[in-house]
Every structure is written in structure tokens, then in C-alpha cells.
Length: 168
Image 1 (cartoon, rainbow, N blue to C red):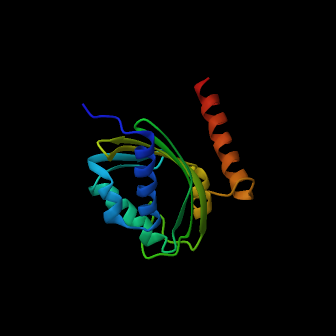
Image 2 (cartoon, rainbow, N blue to C red):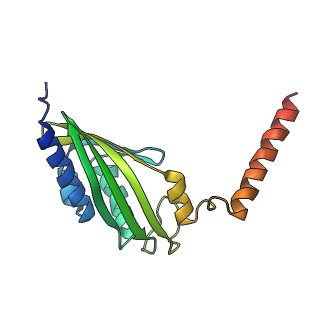
């Protein structure tokens, strides 16, 4: 049975891990996880340490060479730490990100991760960010209120009405 760390230890581990993210240090980042630890960027990807985790972040850093990450707040209780963060970058790197070729677009995102710490290592990380906002900023989805967005919604609504009429 794993002993729950103190809130100050949990918060310190979480802060140190995200400082490694900010430094884009893949070795340090993976060292904070237990082997086989998991992370999920909800709505985007599920990762396992070290394999898919390391590969995904290596791609992120190559796709956004000026990736900047900042910790806004850390709150810890028992074995859980919540980290509120802000990230920016330019999608002008050398690789695709989530299937999209570099567009030169700027990202500016805020999110929150919930980390579960076990025996001094991250066991699980549940990350939450606005995936639609990120897709809009990358150019993969039209901007809110734009003509392309209105056209896309009109097409979706037409499809819905047509399907409903055909079921009757």
C-alpha cells in the first residue's frame, strides 16, 4: 500500500515536473513518472510513460520550436495536485502535430492538469484544455463567429434536419 505524500511534497513534485515541461527536458519529464504511468489530454490523446508519452511531447516540441510554458497556480491535497498553466508557441516547426502540417499559426492556451502522485512519482495525469480552441488557433477548425464556421454549422444543421425527415 502506497503512503499518501504530504500536500507540500505533492505540490513540489508537480511544480518540479512542470518546470521540466517548461524546459522541454524529456528526460527530466519522464523521470517524474512511474514506469507505466499514464497521462490523458482529454479529448486529444492518451499516453503511457515512457513510450507514447515521450514521443508525443518530442513531436510537440519539434512542431512548436518556441514553445513556452508557464505555471500559474499549484494546489495540492494528499496525493493530488492541480496545476493551472498557460502555454504559447508558433506552429512553424519541422513536423506535423496531430496530423496537421505546420501552419505558422500562434497558439495561446490555458489548461489545468490533475496529477496523482504515488511513492514520489506521478502515477496519472489528467490534463484538460479547450481542444476546439486549439484546433481553431491551428487552423484545423474555423474561428468562432467566422463565415466558414457559420457555413459549417449550416451544413451540419441541414444534415440533421434531412436525417430527421428521412426517419419519419
